[in-house]
Image 1 (cartoon, rainbow, N blue to C red):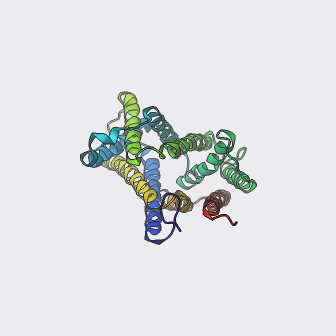
Image 2: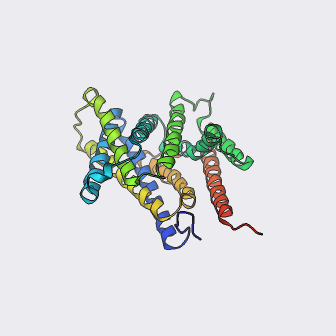
Image 3: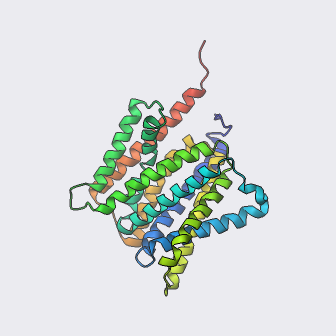
Length: 304
């Protein structure tokens, strides 16, 4: 079956896209796990600067010789900068959250972003949302409450940080979907890296710390590498298969993150957290399935 964009949902292209998405999820989980590891010894803003600087320099060195200065051309420079600010804000909240939260639970909460986008689409963009989607949104947010558990001994103020990340990330995704209609994805990736780098550089003189342990420098380099490779793999994936096909596989990141938390920190979510994680994954995957179903119905010819 062909989508409106001409990409095949199945076949070699679809399989390659799914493989790339799974690899990207593994990279992002490795990034989050390493971020939690370095958060004990490295100032948050210093780690954030290193992550963005690595991405910006690596992206520039890889695409500029091939594409030249034309890669910087954009019809919406203001929106490109706003997109960079939103992603930097999301990264800042992610780094702060991971300092206090287990990787698996953090990732599960962040994965309600597609459900939050549904709320934005209905309340801000005025799009029609079906009752089934509202039920999935309610289920996903209920799963989040099960993980956070307000009022219980497991609750802390740090549990609210991922919710702020969900808001900034949802707006980032909405803006990305709008820009992707007219902008080169590599250009978007380039602007995102440099906007984050320049803003983080402003704070660098006040947070720079000498790191005596060479393993910390290696971990910072690994963070930059996994972030850069992960984003490139996502770009390649969305060139090979439609978003509706790939979205369900993004929830594999929860599994990768739980594995990372267990291997590095010996953390296993408790029963309530596991229940919340399953609720979010099921509702998120259900929303993705609805998207696939609705896109197929839209392509079917009308009977006359």
